[in-house]
Length: 294
Image (tube, rainbow, N blue to C red; front, side):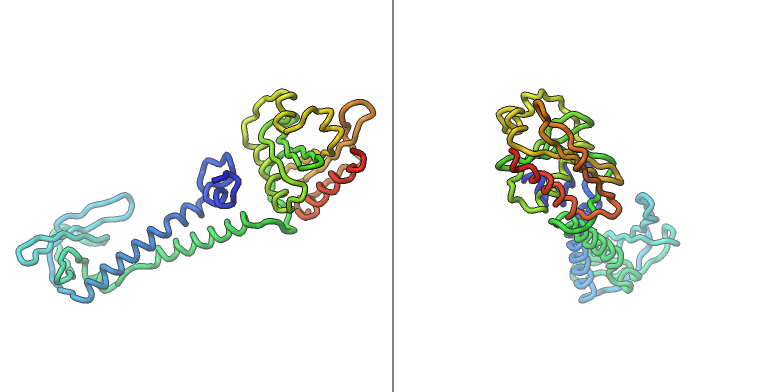
């Protein structure tokens, strides 16, 4: 499974995340909780279909963590002993307690107050509802291909994007140095794929460990013959952000070799009110501006 797939991100988060999302952990528990409810209800229905009432003395009281006391008892049916127990307060060893057991299967037994209260679905139902709501919210957020909402960006990140004759090349920038990961997209990719790739690179620039790489190795990893050839046949922008602003700084061909920053065409977006759609479209438009000059 690819680490950038929607299913992977749903269950494990972004690459580099070390903790499974809480909503996903709850969702994974749901089948087990439902199975537990099924067997609990099945056990109760079998007992209530053929109940037999008796009384016995509490034989022991134990404790598990902070769940309170657990009373233990033994009933004798046809000369055979059967154990049972329940969470209950206010009892002491030796106290008498009413017990209901399944006449044809005495191992299935419970206290009379459990029997009359019936199965307790409340806690499990709440957990299931919370898990479904959190999972649905998470899936909708991940499945969001593209819309006009402002991107949710934390701290600061940097990405250089090149547009060649065939594709977009996304290069991770750590402070001022470029390195892995490097991503590629076809020129006809949709804005959703463009957004996902850009945010992945932003995430890498914040959380991944910087790997020093020589310029010759970097250009090879970008699938280009040389930096000169790349500069001659591509356009590029540096996209940076902090928690409040996102800036797009394009380049222009210098009078000598290489590229210069084109500050006259730099764009800045306030993330509190910016449209993600406008940001993506602006990046792609800046990368197309000098296409005739290549």
